[in-house]
Length: 296
Ligand SMILES: *[C@@H]1O[C@H](CO)[C@@H](O)[C@H](O)[C@H]1NC(C)=O
Image (tube, rainbow, N blue to C red; front, side, top):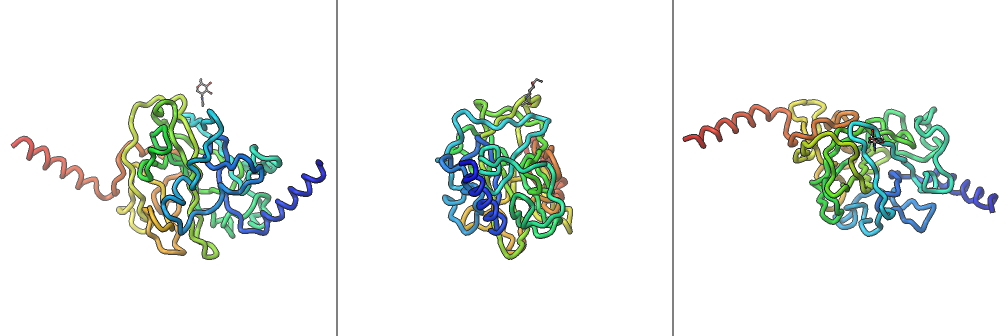
């Protein structure tokens, strides 16, 4: 029995090494864990060319998290998430994490790094991943524009166990928020797609009552900083048939990087409404004019 499952696991491993594998974060608080299958890779399927109904929530709103499972976000602290291309290689599966899960594979060979293809042929191709939060306790109430990106790791996905910096977020309604992991890889080998793993979360030890600002989509601003969006930013919805908020053409993937003004670590500017970096003066002027008009 032990030998048989070992054979099965090596077969699975070989499969992960040869296929263009994809990735998800894995937690009992996730939607779409495909509970009956210990070797599931359903959650890692990339999202592209789908209708809104097909891609939103990774199409898994009905595959609920484990009963009472909630992923804790320590305000002002750090939280670890497991990243894998198959449930088997997580603490929810039989194989578990690979050794040294916090270390990026060296050398970076991509095909035999121990946990699968990351759409990153070269070490420097790793494009960044992010966590978003929606202050709604029911997933059915969440709209795409409700998610605010609150933590970013530029060098992700490169580790099986990834630590995320958590800002001092306000408390969740009824002890529950909806979170999601987002990832867009560079368009290597011509694949253009995005990833989304939603999960139930809750903010612990919050010391703030400040509300999050209204998020807007980012703008590519690496060559013109005035175009950068500062304040609360939405996730990037790209390459599906419906519901996109990013319109970069194929082979020009938008990424969770400085080029889109997603800073490394906790996003501490999320308490302001999203706005263009160059629009501050305009906002001030508009306010002055409004006040003058009012006092007339
Ligand atoms: C919240 O704070 C308490 C007391 O310091 C600590 O024991 C607990 O681990 C914290 N919770 C989280 C999720 O960090």
